[in-house]
Amino acid sequence: MKILDWDEFIKTGCGKPRAASVGVFDGVHRGHQRLLNLVRAKTPSMESCVVTFRENPKRILRPSSFKGSIFNLGKKLEILESEGLDTCVLIDFSSDFGTLSGADFLGLLKKAGVSFLTVGPNFKCGYKMDTNAAALVGLCGILGIEALVAEPVLYSGHPISSTRIRNAIAEGRLSEASDMLGRLYEIEYEVDQGLPDSVRNDPRGAGGEKASLLLRPRQGSLLPPDGRYEICLDSDERSDCREASITGGLIRIDDKAGRGSGRAAIMTMVSRECKEK
Image 1 (cartoon, rainbow, N blue to C red):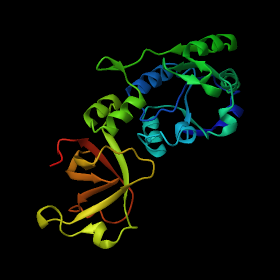
Image 2 (image 1 turned 90 degrees about the vertical axis):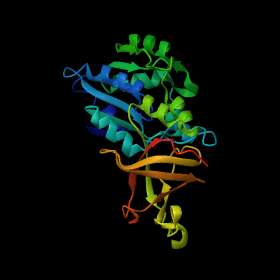
Image 3 (image 1 turned 135 degrees about the horizontal axis):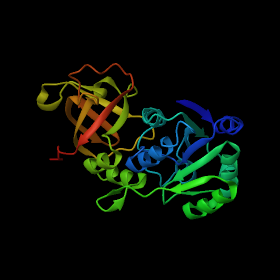
Image 4 (image 1 turned 120 degrees about the vertical axis):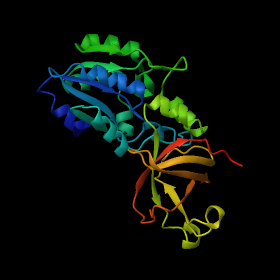
């Protein structure tokens, strides 16, 4: 999968027609996957593209109310690549970009060679969100772009959305979040070397038998509430699973696997079956 910035995408729009979907794609959940399937269906006659953001615009526009990203950029790109797309376009959201009207934005997509565009029913773009999905279809008709508003994917009778998944994680409903994502929720972490050794590596552990390790999630990670959880450090094999506690934005696990090297790693949040006592 090629990764282009916004300017490169526009400059390379003279070749093969492009099929695209546009959005933040936080979590690349089951609703997003429906959009990507529609884009891929246009290949090989078109180049399959996803146009997304390097950073969630909500973090920039409304930082005080933003709960955090479901996955960081690296994980998002990993998932998008696994979807078999040809190209991913990363927009660096800025105040200048934020002043583009929806019509101007779609005009730039046309200039970039986009001939097919699909979005979800709640899609909005442009300055002050001036263009919704219905308006997008009309504008695309004028520009000669085939536009399709995809049907939402439902979970428990309601559309799946990144906001709904973030709320489920923040409230500790990890099984629901994983069902809507189509994969288990993961957190990237690193051993917190800024903490004193006496705190970071606690020799007492559970029952005084096992050392424990204090981990700090990567900045901007979305965490469930404080409590005890089942986690796995090997997400592919669902092995090396254990209990972890989350307190005050830090994660404590026993260190039987010797993971105290300080390197970044991924843990999979399986469930909240381990209730607070």
